[in-house]
Length: 399
Image 1: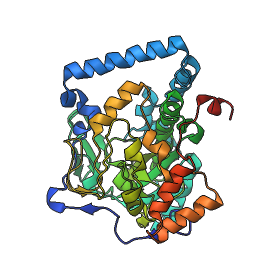
Image 2: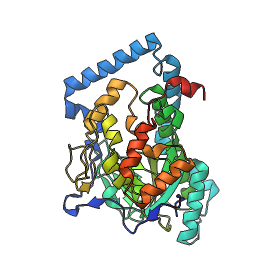
Image 3: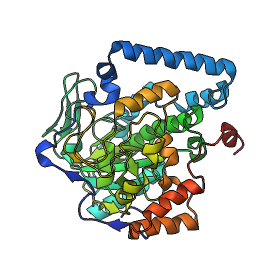
């Protein structure tokens, strides 16, 4: 079991609806990161890039709070692993330390334990390496990308270990389990979003992801099994995390967890180590999101849906077809990132699920998980008490 508060219920099936006829593996090239210029056109893409650069220069020259040299330097430092070759090494599909692994386990012994015991061992190791949350699910191949961002097909084949070539990526048929990992972000920094401090919190999350996933993958390899560590690549992180019992999907199309809201980053490790799996959970998120709408109302670009109900209607080729959810306009979102020069994260800042773990908020979360009667009242009270307001950068540096 994933460690959750008492009001969180488990389910036999994930809390999302799939229309099998339309549910195909998604091509990673269709994400806004892979095809932004195609979606907006080269002229608009260059225009946004120039606006981004101009504002960066102007804000640095003016020492603009939240965008000053010291604020941007914090983000630059936080990117160290994420924006370096270290990330690629840590996300390697086979051990980057082959000789050392061979020396550790020359006879290639395998962990001989029950699936339940193996799950406990892996979860404890994941938390040791820095995971805030960890869950395990059977790998749904429908969540695995059909192609990576370079256009290489991702295929399953009866091989003894993962294979990576310039032509394709091969996952062994035996890799039937996935470990979902969540890492935290500094909430004081996130409360300033959008600025360079919230960007730093996000960047450090992305730098932490490969450290946790890569370390856990090496641990599993040392136990004698295959392990494929992934960040946002290879497979869709949110549905995997939902399958593994980490949370539910929210109106903003991101994961919401019981303790940390959306203030997490997700990674995963695909493996052939047999483990007992966790069950999906339900704590009233979808029902609350129907009436809250706070993320959508505060979204400066209008990227988040204001529709009252989730639907199968997509908003562009960047959306996954065949899934009933609130689909976002990822192009509008990414354009806003460029205008801000720091990314955005307003939807994370204003979400009521991100509050501090106090007695009052526990009571509210328990009520939301139990009944929908007070959802509108709780959403209104969140605004009334001023939660989700942007805090000045001085609050971070003084903390």
